[in-house]
Structures are given as structure tokens and as C-alpha cells.
Amino acid sequence: MVFWRVEYSGHVSTIFDLARSENVVTIFDADDIVFVPHYARVDLIDGIRSIGATEEQIERCFSDMRRTFLRCDQGSTTTAELVFAMHSLRPVVHLLPNIYDMASLKRARIALRMRGEPGRVNAGDGLVRIGYAAGSRTHQRDFAPICPTIADILHQRPQARLVLFREPETHRPILLVEEFPSLIPVQDQIEWRDMVPLAELQDEFARFDISIAPLETGNVFCEAKSEIKFFEAALSGAATVASPTGPFRRVIHHGETGFLADSPSEWHDALLELIDNPERRVRMARDAYHSILWPFGPQAQAQRMKLALTSLNGDDAAARSAETHLARDRLSPPDLPVIPASQTIFHHDALGEAPVTVVITSYNYEAHLLDALESVAAQTLPVLDLIVVDDGSSDGSLALATTWMERHRERFNRLILRQSLTNAGLGGARNIGMDAAETVHVMQLDADNTLRPEACETLLESMNNGTAYAYPLIACFNENGPVLMDMTADTHHQPGTPELLGDLPFNPLSLVSGNRIDAMAMVTKWAWAAVGGYYVSREAMGWEDFDLWCSMAERGLPGHHVPQILADYRQHETSMTNASTEKDAHKARVVAFVPDRHPWIRLSAEQAKPRKN
Image (cartoon, rainbow, N blue to C red; front, side, top):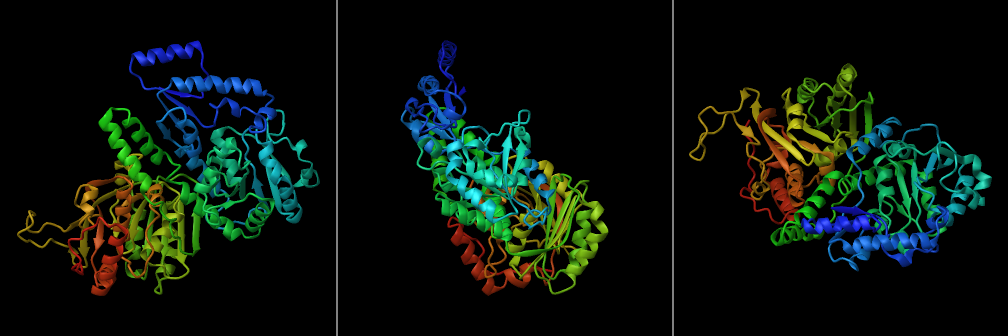
């Protein structure tokens, strides 16, 4: 039983008595330090003043919450700072951060798409909006130190706007601007927006180019505030400038996924940099989005919740849960996915919601690309997104793809052709495609292979909310038709059996001796982001998919096998496997590279072995 910010009373005491008699574990949950009565001071919590309460009222509230907490068995909260504060009262405290839900993610991304292609600078109305999405009238002192800087920025950049919110009916501001006279000279550059229900909040963030999250640093109450304003902005494609409180310092890579600013000069420089450099602003928002998809998503929270709940089931369960929890804490945070520079050749967006994106990666595959494209168009899913990534081809495949897309735009919800500015290699091309995808589920397809009509629909139906990827049986073929298996003493297959890839059930331990899962799989975008995407290395190109599966195994992200032939793998002399990966010198580099990233791998076949044609 969870008590969220519950004040103690006789009724609550009765609930505790009943819980104890029924052996029900009780947990106190809070997202602020509301259980330390002596923090109920205006100099620590400015919101006491701005909401019209008294210190005595808030101290009594905090005291009653503390009494409730002391009757509970354990605690749960949203930041490491709050965990530390709770530990003085209860030794077992679960860290369960604030997260987004899938409805918010969908709403955020469709709102961003309405402004143009995500990840690209869109002209819009020429204004640069700096949004302050304060949700309550409790942040006057947080905003005060940066207000003169904001006013100065608005004066220096006439195209800048400060977006503030007000109550819909009374139009009373959430930020009490009468306390900030420096805003009077630039009041014409303030946009007032009515507050919206939580379900519509991401629409407002999508209007921002820059989101600001000022907090009073060094203030014990503010230092425990969560990272929620960072990931809300990132979901909707806004770059963030935030105060360097503990939670923001841990989640924001300064200068890469956002800016941390404390002094007026730091706020000034960060805001001007983002206003004057739209390319960097968009890139920063993109990287922020990738950085938060996993840690603040429901899939990661499900992992945490499962461990927390399992730990309640006796000594052995508590020990196993603690072992997993501590091991996960020791994992190094993944790097951000490397997204090579690319240009958009073709872009069509009907602004619908497709369940799946197919990403085709192509390099000089003009001879085979049309087969791959037609196989995607023939999918049984009626609403579908398609992204083709041309990795700097020198043949006619780019023109072929462009012409085909012009003729088939009505078949797809989103249809995008991107070309890398320089040949990036397979991992880079896959990452360009994953970056462009706006669906949770993304089907990978190399341009020399094909999908069977039911591939996307069947794989999608096989996955639940926590499945990181799903892979099918894949039949091999060449110019003569199906490829048949070699009959040896070690096989139980009948003569004439078609050669298949991906024929083993999912088990991460099968990866110890080598890859058993082909790249033609349906991968979730959150899982791709959780492990830092496909590696990008031209020197060790070829095992990007194997590395991805290994990285997911290390983080406990499950795959799923669908024992049905849903795709076809073309064997030919010019395939990347034969032309590059399985050449002796290159294979040696790959064999050294991937196990170095995953030391638990013990390859059973290290020598080059081209696939027959």
C-alpha cells in the first residue's frame, strides 16, 4: 500500500492497523521534501508566500506527513537527493523517477511534426520562443535571478519571445510579473498562453524553441526537484537551459544535450548561443530526446518497479533484487547515438500515426533497391512509415528512390529519403534512419533484401510493451532461387531443406559464442537509445547488429523470436558480408572490436567465412 503525501489522522492510523494485521507492506511516497517540518520556512520554500499560506500551516502539514512516513515500512521517491533525505527515517527507499507515458510521447512528437521535419531547422514564423512552463505560482524566487538577463536578451534579439502562462478564465499570470519590473520595457515580446490540462502540455512545449528551468541552487528544497522539465522539453524538441541542481547536473550533458547555467553571464551566453545558432539548437534538442527516451520512459520504470515489488517477497527475493539493482547501477551510462550528418532529399508527412517505420539502408544497391521498396509497399499494415537512407551512393540508387517515392507517396503516412553527406558506414546509416523514425517500432531492412507482406504486422503483434526487438525466420535466396542447406552429420534437417537465418529461440546466452540474430528485426526506438544506438566504425563495420543485441542483453532488454518466415536474405558476391565483413583482414578487426566492448563474448568462429552464393 502506497501513501502519497498523506497527512496523518485517526483514519490513516486505522488503515495502518489493518495493513499490519494483513501483513501488507506500506510505502510512503513523495516528490518533494515534505516530511521535514523545519524546512517549512519562507526563506527555503518561496511558494509558501506566493500561494498565500503561512509557515505554521505548512509546518503542521509536513509534521503530519512525517508521522505517516514513520508508520510506513519503506519509502519511495523521485530523486537521489530525496532518497538521501528519506534515509534518515527509513533505511529502505526506492528511487522511482518521474517519467513520461506513451500518450505524452505520441502527443509530443506529432506536435513537433506539425512544425516540420523533426531534427531539421524549420523557418516557421521567424520567431524564437523561450518558454517557461511553470506549473504553479511557487517559483517567483527561482525566476528572479535570471529575469534581468531574460529582459536583456529580449532587448538584444527582437525576434525572441518569452512565453509565459496564465489561468484560462481569470487570465491571472502564473508568474507574478508585478514582482519583475525589468520585464516592463519588453512586455510586447511576452507571449501569454492559457494553461492547459496535463494531456495537452506537450503541445505547448512543442511551440518552444528553448525551454528554461531556473531553480534556486544551494537551496535544499530546490536541489531535490526532479528533472521533469528537461525531459518534457526534450520530448517535444525544445532545447533546455537549466540551473545546475543535482538532478539536472546528472541528466544534462552540458553543451551537448542542454546547457547548465547558474550566473547571469552563463544564462546570457547559453540563451544567445541557442537563439543565434538554430542548427545547434535543433541538434541539442535531438540529442536530449535520445538521452531521455529510455531512463524516463515507462519501460525503464517497469524494470525498476518490478525490482522494488520483487524485493518485498522474502529474503531470497530481496537478495536477488538487490543483486540486479546493484549490477545495473554499475553499468556505465551509454553514449549518445552517433548520428552522422545527412540531408533530406524527399519528405512527405500526412501527420497520421503509423505503428511501424521501415528503415532501408542502401549503398550502391541500385540493382536490388526496387525489390526492397516494393516489398515494403506490399506490407499488410495499412498505415506505414518508410525511411530510406542512402549512404553516399555513387550509382543511380538515389535517383531511383526519389522517383519511386514521388509515385508512392499516397501509400505511406511518412515517406523520407535522407542521404549521408559522406559515406558513414552501416552503423551510421542505421542511426540516421532510427533518428528520423517517429514510431516506437522500427523494422530494419537492407536494400538487397526483402520483406514478406505480413512481416511488419506479424512482428508488431508479437511484441508487448517491454519487448526491445523481435526477429523472424529468414529464408536465403540467390539468382537461382532458394538456397538449400548443406547436409552434414551435424544437422537434423532433411535433404533439400531451405537455408534459414534466425532459427533459434530468444536467449541472450546464445550470443556468447557469436551472433544468431540477423539485422532484419523490428527494434524499438527506446531500446536503441537505451544502448547508444548502433556503433559507428568503418574499420570494424559488419557486426553492428550483433553488438546491439549484446548491449541490450547487458541491460536486461528482452527480444522475441517469431518462428515464421517473414523475410528473404539475398546471397550475392557484392553483399557487405562477402565483400567486407568476411574478408580475413577486416574480420580480424571486427573480431577484436566487438568482444572488447563485451568481454563476456567467447566466439566459436573467428575466421572469415563468406556466405555461399
